[in-house]
Length: 333
Image 1 (cartoon, rainbow, N blue to C red):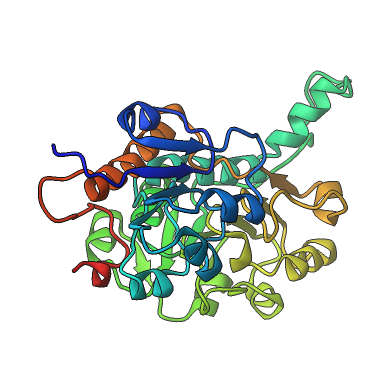
Image 2: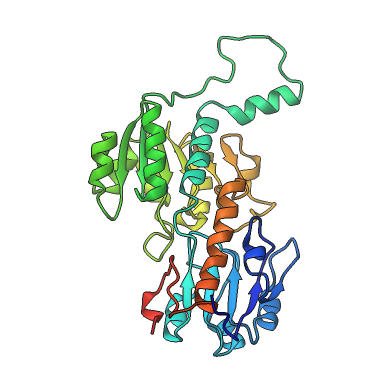
């Protein structure tokens, strides 16, 4: 490979896996702190860089691109989503935007199903009871009674790679599968006997577990709100491992407090980390995780490899750049 003369990179967080080794020899500026860099820090450090390897928590907007200058060639995001990047502005400037695609699908599906089981069978409450030495009778007929997962109906919002992976796990538990998606997935319907519904309210009305796997955009923001909670069963659970803003957190709290739904399992929130004053923290009918959907060693390392490879494909190449996971092909010359 032929090294291009312009190879200055700003990386906004230390990464697991091979990324830094892959980029060895290039001019790397690394934010080493545990906390994400502030916007002020990004504005200062992005100046003169040819690439930025950013996280979902880093808002990359017009101001950041202005600070980088015309030599910025690629914004490589260590994430499966890219709503934190002003893609239209990047495209206008001819800047490549890349992401890690669906590499985290299986890991995220694992967490989604872990939340389903934890919510249904009171796993967290049971663990807490034992640890707090409140388990006083060896076995009781009515101790921590939960809900069936086997044979229940799962409603999947968004049947892409992650949603399909969740559906396969549900099939293994003998669940009835319904899904609502922008695109019909007839292959998964045939494979898993999944039922496609065109009306989201229909899915909500019949599902025992509603799990979200759609992307966040203007249409999907607060897709699940007070009116939608009214459509759900009182015995139903909401699972969200996608993006926090797809659910109106205020309306969710109200639905949980009033008993409109049975509970929720959340790996994502409208604001992260969750506010220390959030009523969710005191609720016993929720399971809360700190956004760890893709947090296994293999997945996170592979994501780092893909993010680094995208930068190499643009800054170091024998031919014209052609990164594999490109969000905006319109940016190509």
